[in-house]
Image (cartoon, rainbow, N blue to C red):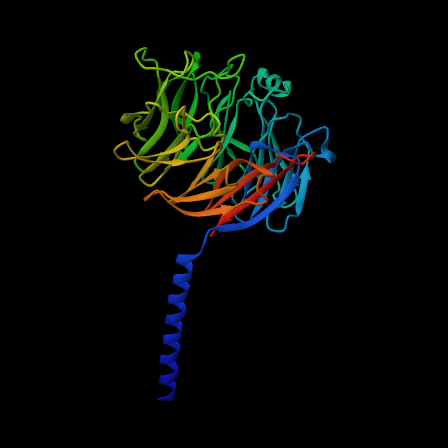
Length: 428
């Protein structure tokens, strides 16, 4: 009898404990999980954070590496710099990502693709980029102007493989040894600007790139990742020109994939449509069938224009929601949230001038006037948290990115005479 009483008491205690844990889990607040500062300026788009909170960054302006960029590993929880290397970095532009369970991969357009040990920074392998000579010449020119786009190239993860998009085409690489498994020529010779990284879903890579024979236009290409076969290609119209002299960059996040299709921006040449200026064709948000490339719906953006200041994650999709950073003369910077099924605008959100991140049902965006990251629940459009990133006014947000269920924020120090960058992790 006594044993049964002890057993029943144990069951009740366990049930109460489980219930309490469930309630605590549901009510866990969003907060800053980690934050660390390193010397130098982290290159836009050239950084990644692993699940353990270690950030891998291409950094310039360090006093100890005055003649070159460096790849730096920084523990954002302890603030400790784990390692740094300058080996093989001879250009001002390097693309970088961390392969889950594999190496840190650095891609130097026109030169090489390098695999580094994430624990020590030691070089594991090196492959020549095998690109036209003009790519290396463009990448090493290094003019000191803000508007010049990054050299052509990008990286993406496809399962346990690596995809490299370059002027030579799309290549799949085994990250364990750097071996090329297939390469698909895509005829993008002479495209002197950055490419949007491929977006991979259900074994297909979706790439926005210049149109063959007409570098003033762009296209969306679908490629079978398993065998390197092009499945379909759809014209997305002319690429808006920026800068002086005018350039035509394709920003990161030029397309996104959700369960209901692939979304991208198509620029119309309809002379009857009003334009912001004579060099800017009218944009529309389009949703294409992922298997065939056929048009599912098209939504005119009317008074809205793609936010050219949104460095990363220009488009994002999750569930039945699509998120698009936009700008208008009357409303400034806004986030437009669309129904992916019907192509209907659901609501608008205020946002800062930089990028956004989407993880599951949550969206994170930076508000400059609050120096904070706002977390929004996409289904309802309600703001569920505001996470401060002090000290206010000292750091300027550069990029926001989803890392699993968390968000990583890269911020540059705008007040210090010596360049520094802070990397913060926000989560529950």
